[in-house]
Image (cartoon, rainbow, N blue to C red; front, top):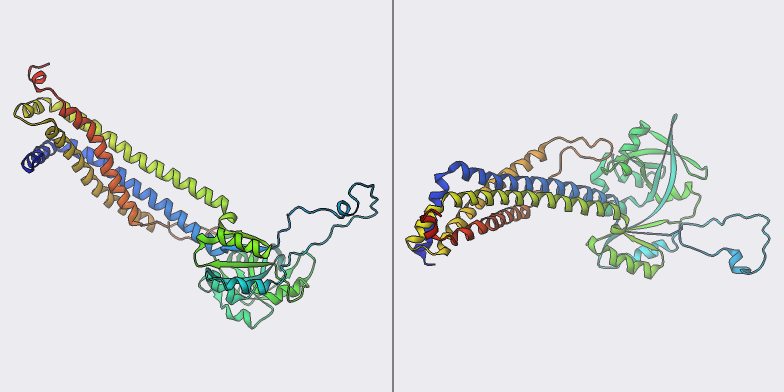
Length: 420
């Protein structure tokens, strides 16, 4: 097809589009709202997923090293006299420690790995927090607060007090905001901490932090390693966990496997620890994209029906064009140009509407309460969604316009002009 023929086809297509503006606008609106809702829905859902993932990664290490207590083991009877008759006067379970041996040396060796951003050895224990008549169960972590800050950026999450105050006070505590609210305590107050073994200690609240996740802020507190070792009546070598942050968290499964093989202790990567969340996130993304693309496909069917009706109403015009010497490919191009124009203009309008809806959603207030720290809906303004929207929208209209245009190209002008 030469340039003159293409130019003439474009002119005829323009006449068809402007001769029935209402029909053209309706077809464009199908694409417009399809792409607009696609962008708004995908931006909101991926924004929510990214926000919750970021919070989860902020509150949890890339790799968690600890002593696994659930591994199967043989009893002493099975080892001493497995086939004989045994008389047991008093059976008392053996107290097994959760201590990681040579924990600081292990942390030092891990830090030598170029893939590792930092490590934080810690002592973790379940405790009861007592303040007046209120008693709540929770968790206390004995840490080097500066190492913990390097891994989890605690400094930016402090709502009151300073991290450095914990270094100079061995009877201090940095408490989660949700836990402080439940205990009705503030900066400078003292709480009594009781361990499961009955040991108690009075600690002063030196700071209050808010990660943004209720399951963390409502139960967790930080103290110095020596403080927690003291209330657990353990020596200075007692370490229960090692948290590891990587420069690239996608390497966590590989590095965790290497660390577990090297140091024996259980090394759990963030993907294994958050498998339920990741599965839910994947399912939500599948549903979001399925619904969004369905909207665009429905818009494509609308264009298909409109072009079909246009061809039916233009049968005599098509017959005249072919009688004047237009080839079937020229006729097909006329209607393909119409569908592409509808798809492109409708797509551009859809991008504008999609951005507008996304912007309005991002400004809508949202109260996360005590569960999650969120004031507004998180929206992901990734340019890729806009590219996918316009490409898929134009592609859908092109496919929707191909069948009617192909039908128009095969019209027999003699039969039409005879009135058959």
